[in-house]
Length: 458
Image (cartoon, rainbow, N blue to C red; front, top):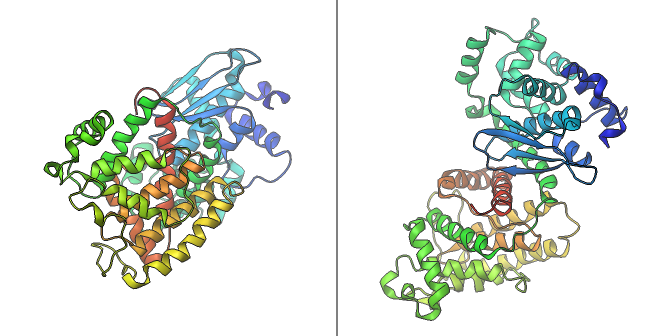
């Protein structure tokens, strides 16, 4: 525990404190970069959660007594590099300010002395000066590095491009070009490294950082049994899933449909042909309810037939649901050809092997590996495209089913994420790279962690 080392004598200087903490934490071993501030909090017995903060980067809640534990909250709406920085920032409060017994709210862009110290500590912890010098030396020409070089250096440390640029410019004075703050800030904004073609590696590293943070967040998640929370989540789940597939329905109508189905059941007016254009909303609700029942567990890939049949249960021609397609089709915008309809059964049998392997080893796999395998199965279904319609919704409901049996919360992709989701599918189609698709679901899971641990708003 952190109390086994007296850091008080080093709290006069953020750089010294960060260096002494690294030496103590790694106990003489060489650190592996990027450092993991989430793991550091975890090992020090500090519970942390992502929260939907509006004006805060994070918060440190000191323990009230020896029987209590410290808690850190981190803004879920910030990029992963900033979340890592905030974790390191709150770590500083735990090391330096815990004994004061005060809760510390860390405002965005705060200029207080205590916050500036923690910011400096975080920067020195995640990018120690000596290690920064070593990395800069690999790219240095005529005593300086370029902004393009900074991309690779930031990638190594798991740091944001801007924070790494400032560190090199002001700590080492080794950045080419104008470095006066106002002008450098404009240079960074104009450079826009995330939009450059050669920054794919940076984006992929963001994904790996999300993956690592999930491992630590997961242990603090407790499934919420409050039915009001589940109903409210289901409304948004069904709404966003249908919007993602182009079904024009507003959230109020979804809420009305699902509430009426709960109350009226078989007699619900929404089960009539009058509402045929949006009746799949009701079927989607059935799918969600089914996979969330504790007694219902996936056993084979062919469970998707049951799910797809539920989607169209209230449709004008319900008998078409749950049937494998009997002709070839074209998926608009896709960079692949769907499986020939005659090959669907054998392709599903192959995928069934992967599904059963995942289920057999679900308790042995790391959380990240489990999620990756589940997403891979979801993606494979989009290629097989087994049904005439409803493939996307059915495959994502199956994915949520696989999440549930791992005690992960259900997720939905906001309708605004449609373009990003399709781009990730495109990358998987063309480059056979599922990193972006995995990353989308990592972030969606973290978002659901927040939704299910905050009450009453989802």
